[in-house]
Amino acid sequence: QLSRPLLNGAPKAKLHSGIVSAVADMQSPAPVHVPGFREAPWEIIPLEDILYCERVVGQKAHFNLHVHQHDSNLGNLITLELSADEKGVMDAWVDMLQKKLLEQRRTSAEAPPAKGGLALLMQWAEWFQFPVKFFVSMTIPDMDDPKQQHLYPVAFTMSMVWLAVFAFCVVKACDGIHTDFGISDDILGFTVAAAGTSFPNVFSGMCVARQGKTSMAVANALGANVQNVFLALALPWTIQSFGLVGGPFPMRVDNLLPAVIECAITLAPVVLVYLCCGCSMPRWSGGLFLLTYAIYVVFALGQQVTKCPIWPLSCQA
Image (tube, rainbow, N blue to C red; front, top):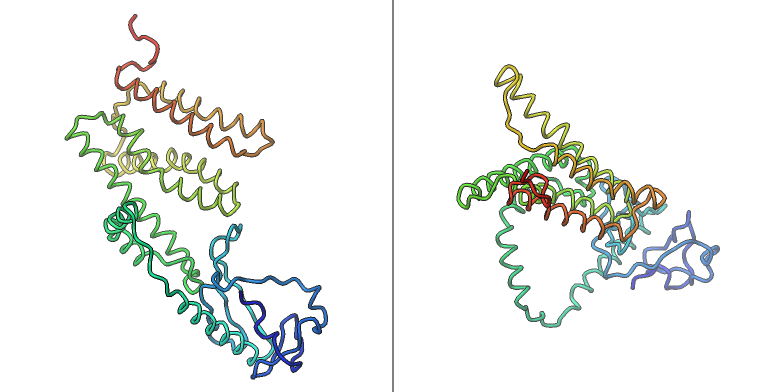
């Protein structure tokens, strides 16, 4: 562990604004003799958790430390901004950190572990994912890089563009499956297409939930459905009505009422859990929602296979 490398020498330094100031030869007083040292809030950061450190351009007594944080509400990567009153202090910290990081990278001399079948399978999966990852990484700025965080509007816009491209690919794939295998469009719609277009919401919800932002995760799930109704459906209908057709156009929709009733029934557990648990989502609610979705899929498949909108009840009069 790297804990205050400048606090290991003879008394030749003084304390400036909570930061130990040392001379160029990295000599400093013993920690116990520094006034207020024991009472000051400080933390030991394991050296293996430090990813890299960098000097700030244009600031002589300031540098950033990028650390991998475990089980934190701040995310996996946090940036610590450190400053000193004297440039020599910062240079000593940066030089020592870089030296220790280089030494750490040279200490792993063990042979790499043998790869199992799952690891080899993941290599094939990564090979197929490379084209997508390449174009996405080239067009979307990395928000984990502090130097690119000011490009967040570009990252957001390009993310939406790629989501639209991938959603179009999922829909075209469903059309091909329907043509080649004769599977109903309705079945493909609430299984393959729904799952494929909802995975981004699932992953984004998981990311913000792991960061402790549960309110954002719930708002993301509910807001996605609102967007599907009032934007994903309204926008193409508006373009079709005003731009292409120039008025109303017929659209064949069968058995819409049972689908609306089913949506309301599947939403009921969410509202009940939220109201009965003090406006919160307990851990077991995730399993309940998965069970509700599984029941919905079973009922929807039964209705499509039997052509009966009130399945499992009989449609024979």
